[in-house]
Length: 404
Image (cartoon, rainbow, N blue to C red; front, side, top):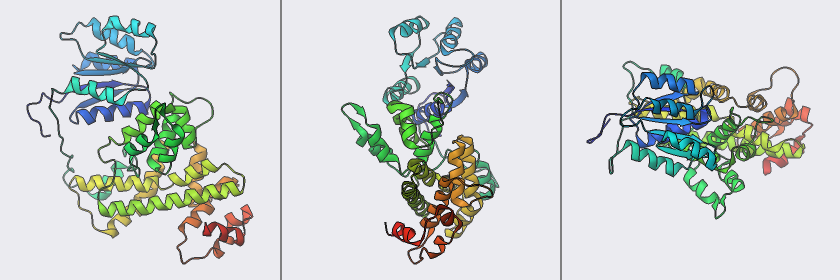
């Protein structure tokens, strides 16, 4: 860490039940103080146990916590009569005057209503964690002695934050704003081709805080369930990650090819679904997400190089993708709890297992085969495939699809 006349790295507690909101808070805070030491809690009792043990420099707590709510955590902190008072940010979805009056006697440092205003939160954190004009820069962590690429990738598989962004989110959000606020339909059009944004919003919309009714399986459903404020926050938060985009030319070239393959698969899937009167947007999302693991792996390879690791040209990158790409995708889809139906469609892209197949699964398999064809290959072989036979799609239909 490189610092100039700065206090010691602050110790910060974040208590938030929703995993995606918790991660967003973490990213915003680390963007202000990358050296901060963070403890993350999912309920109020955990927070109170931590507060009894550790002298924190800042606490950020959601009012609507399970076990012990955030207001009682704040009450407990103020009863300790620390001098000076512990900085305490209380967040809440309650924006009525009665709730504000209830919290004010506990003297929170700030009372922020959800969905959070990212700029306001950033300014608050800067005021609490930095003196005027001061900045903190942190060096990229180096590799442990003797670390090999295969061991590194095996370790990162369960920890990766997902894929690099393929969309400029600042531009996408700016284009989606109008005098009345954020236009969700315009935002969907701006980000629908980004696998990472699609996956994160679907996962966030299915998390405990938003899980009402049927599982969300498309980007459009996710945006409407989350609402404009939370959707915008999550999308902007992705740009705060340490390496949100690939800047290594070799890795960026690989990512471009996998991204284009995802786009082609998604478009073929949507066209086939429309032709067969099936759910178009779910098929499109499955196609868009099927290479998420490969893109996430490329992001980890960039982090490996930034940490001082060596990476040969095409061969070593290709080998890493062949060995780890599928595992990264499976781990992400499981850890993010993407709906089972959507995962089954993604799996059908790669192969059709035994048993009975849904028509949508057959569509995904057919779309992937179409997308993988080179410009010199014809569709005659695909017309004889199991998916084509079961869907009753013949050579004329496939030839028309190929020309689009």
